[in-house]
Length: 206
Image (tube, rainbow, N blue to C red; front, side, top):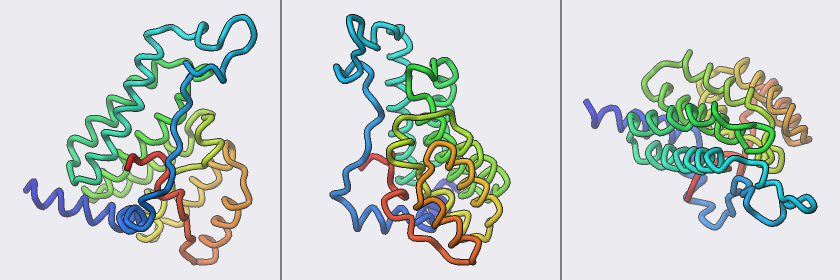
């Protein structure tokens, strides 16, 4: 049963476009979540990190690591492990101050991981709900710069869930109002498969 689950999960990830894209873009630079202990976040006599409780920073760093581990488990076909990591990352994100830490990045990627797991298990309704939850993430410095990860949207679109993908794209426009997003929306409405390019990979560890 476990081998069958891993096989189905791999097929789900394969349909998302992740596997061939990763193989073709090994040198693609992945965006890193902001490091609020960096001097670039200094704002006068007191740096921004002075305003962040040390336990919050530890929770944030742990949650980011759990997202990375979740993606790695997903790509290895370990559905239960990926699910556990993503749920723990979401739990930690709830305690973060979104005004100071990139909570949105964690919410976005945790829900995408859980959506892939659900899709691999045949639970399309859950997968669609997770995609929408990923789009409803709070403001994120990383997502504002690089945009959303489109792997789950791609997988669902290949299965005909046009309305869900359109809703996701519209939600993402709140934090990434780029012409590229509008072009993808028009292509989806026209019945075409957009080339999501590096947005299939953003946030996924190599």
